[in-house]
Image (cartoon, rainbow, N blue to C red; front, top):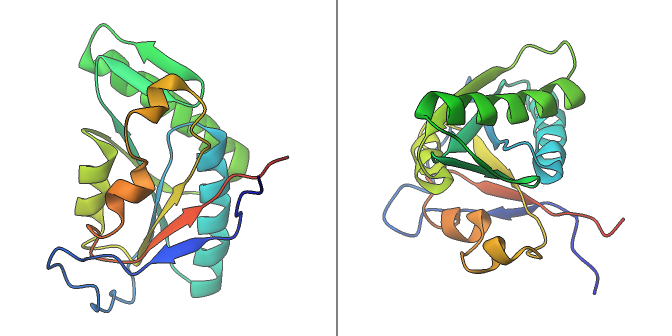
Length: 165
């Protein structure tokens, strides 16, 4: 079965938030980065789009202690500080791989990604997230971040699909 790899954009905001709001001229593109290869694709796309629009990119990493989950699997942490350090390092590796030497704002926040990105959407030009195939058992029981975020965000949500390669 072929996967769509072109970006999918949702206009967002079906819950009463303003989907027609115009972003500030200096509003950044917010991209979710958790350390997985899908977040690498999302960051690459966000950087190219930011260059086209002449805006900044804000990298957002969310984590829920005591477990940090990414493509490489869960990592059990003994403390919030350790969970934050694991999440930060996984995201930093992606940033260094995709944008070596480029100065990017990177924030790491405790909480679920949906709530954090919904909050970020009020000051963002758009939210960019990577999508992954739902092969692992611990991915299957929960709706995807894209599905949870679409309709809640106050700005467009761009979903970057994974390839079959």
